[in-house]
Amino acid sequence: MEHLRPEARRIAEIPAVERLDCLATDRWIGYSRAQDALKRMGMLLATQPGRVRPQNMLIVGPSNNGKSTIAEKFQRQHPRRSSEERDRHIFPVLAVQMMPDVTAPRFYAQLLDTLGSPFGTMRQTDRRNAVTLNLMQACGVRLLLIDELHNLLCGPSSRQREVLGLIRYLGNELRIPIVALGTKDAWLALRLDDQLENRFQPFLLSRWGDDPETGRLLASFETVIPLREPSALGFPALRRLIVERSEGLIGEMHQLLSSATAHALMEGRERIEECDLMNCSFQVPSHRRQMMERELRA
Ligand SMILES: Nc1ncnc2c1ncn2[C@@H]1O[C@H](COP(=O)(O)OP(=O)(O)OP(=O)(O)O)[C@@H](O)[C@H]1O
Ligand SMILES: [Mg+2]
Image (cartoon, rainbow, N blue to C red; front, side, top):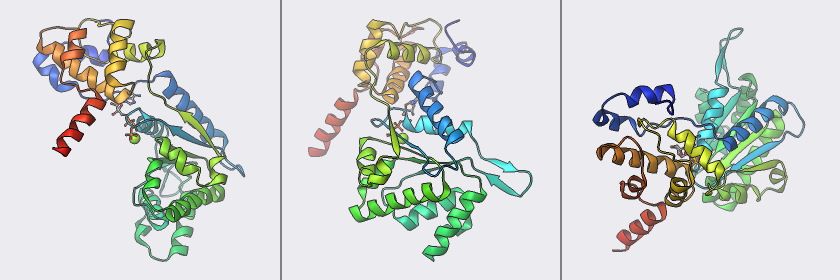
């Protein structure tokens, strides 16, 4: 079982029926585009705080394609820690999710909540803005991470502009870089504020194609799938099929491979074959959507 990482090897040793329960777990795979994104974010964190015009980054990609997973990995690499000198926490990376019903006061309240402050519900706007800035400084925030930025487009345009203005203000006042993540609508949202748009370097997480890079990703997935024999997932034959059925989305690949593994185990096999990818319970995302639409119309 040399094709497996040690943890997967341990699981592969247990009987097939018990192994079925261990398939859905998420494990980080450091594919090269994700490593590049983490490196860029690390550079921003190391070099941009304190600059008059810090550079920002916008990670854009379709839904279910690994954006939040990269953000979570970055947070794990730069965790909050307690400060010895004073009784407080240091947050090098402050991470929030843009809510669909965001307003400027709600955004401030969310930042305060995430910092663990009881002042999130404070009513006086001026005080709340000042308290947020002071607290972010006191907690040593060096980078603000905003996931699901596209949710900004859910609100009326006056509110969108107000929140974008607030994001710009925070970056300028605190002199910290901002990393935002979202679908292409996130990019459309940023374009509403010229001054913000030109401060964000886009970083694309495109759909995966039928190419050697995807082959390497699938070979990495194979090292964490607890099957006793290698399946050659990264080789052209299975690779093409996996890209086609997952429609090039990493989250769908993960689900397809989990279902195919379960199918193989139930058929008494220790490797994934074409029939497992075709006959397992996984549904191609666009078929799933079409089926739902038909059901809802009926
Ligand atoms: N680096 C990775 N290693 C292993 N699995 C991954 C990785 N990145 C993503 N995945 C798989 O893809 C799934 C979806 O990823 P994620 O939630 O990061 O997508 P997203 O782009 O943030 O989607 P959305 O726009 O809908 O929020 C994860 O739950 C996980 O199963
Ligand atoms: Mg996400």
